[in-house]
Length: 307
Ligand code: ADP
Ligand code: MG
Picture (cartoon, helix red, strand yellow):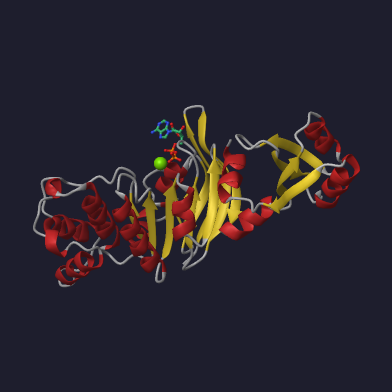
């Protein structure tokens, strides 16, 4: 049950919201679309779920093309759209029955499926309430329940935790992780920690293009070929910064705010500066009080790629 996206482009008028992207998702992967607002995440999801046709390109879900059999693809996919549209004047049970019928769940299976979803999504105490009586977090659970009612093999969740409080976020993430053990999941988010906490693999999307693809470790290590150091040197002097910058291996030197004598030093790609910094201090008779390597943060990678 793989999802293959080939040279996908979506134009709104002249604007390319999605610009020639290709990727493949294998059965059982939990993949995060990470990117700033307007990157093209929702548009890509709408095309995979057959709610919108590609301008150019093709998508196949389990070898079925979105240009061929959309209703079959819709049956294989559970979709939580952005803004989670629900019918507010229905009770949870009625709404889930309605979506189950639309998804073609057989009449005899419907009560059982509703019961399972209510259990799985933690809606037992709320089940007879109308949707308009529910808090945002519980509405989101109803959105997840409707996405899964027909037991699809693939779940596509567009910003599943927006608008939730921190406790609800933890709960929903836990639920997604649990679901990911059995299903292929694609979720989108503009929050890095969210994607890192729930996904095996991250696709960073920016301005309609995929700018990175990998696990959080591989993304971090791609950036790691640029060594980052913090040094503390005394006495304070005017030559310090220029001398450090003068070292052949150093690309960038920035004084650390509110900490006189502390500098953050970035080496050129695949070069290292520790020994040269030490030698420089010896030569100038400066004291090197501290020198530590900093691990590249995923935030930095994300910022670099999407700025
Ligand atoms: P994301 O989900 O990553 O925030 P979207 O896919 O919603 O991004 O949007 C990508 C770009 O396409 C944005 O610039 C957005 O303004 C534009 N866009 C989205 N939907 C429409 C639409 N229906 N008509 C015109 N432009 C749209
Ligand atoms: Mg969106």
